[in-house]
Length: 252
Ligand SMILES: Nc1ncnc2c1ncn2[C@@H]1O[C@H](COP(=O)(O)OP(=O)(O)OP(=O)(O)O)[C@@H](O)[C@H]1O
Image (tube, rainbow, N blue to C red; front, side, top):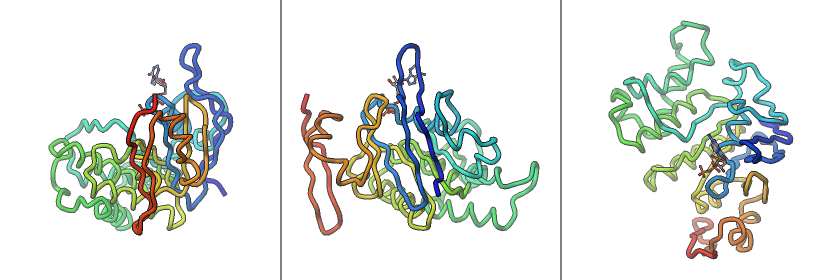
């Protein structure tokens, strides 16, 4: 069973393929970290997989009608613009729309999903605050909570830990790993390779629009690949609390 299958996905911008023949599947139980340098194509891959970006090739999600797709996958995008002055609770509740008949009010199951998402992201104290009047990191957590409230088999999040403090980065990664543990899946782009190593079950390394490596985190984050793709030398060690990876020096 797969929750996402893309085959030969290609996105061209002018003469250049910014995504070049990507094939991969995401199965229940996986927390997949999508890593790669700036411009490697992580956002383009997520958007094309969701059908938000014109692409050649096939994506199982892009094929679905919008209503079915919104029940199959939730997306927390990189841009965190919140345009309307909704309360945090009302914004998170928007995640329930794909499950409601048009115009219907939230039922008890919807309220429970909203409560769970708010609790997971530590937002209980913010429920009544306007989402336009909280900090950038708090807004990021609200948008992750909205995607979580959608309660889809697959959650796709673009740089969800950017701008979060250390405790909330760990909390967010625990949420994604937790989804995988309960038989759902997450596909999460990350620049923090330490978080990727520690919390993901699998890493897909993108380099200039192609997959440079795909496998268990310890096998993907090797010194030669870090040097070749990211141009960095890193300290990697095992500790009682799990693996550590810290980029130390530029190689190029
Ligand atoms: N609107 C656009 N028009 C033209 N080129 C674009 C556009 N958006 C992205 N690109 C190019 O497509 C390539 C892939 O960009 P993408 O945003 O997918 O990378 P990314 O891996 O998510 O990068 P980052 O880590 O910086 O967020 C880059 O070379 C980028 O310059």
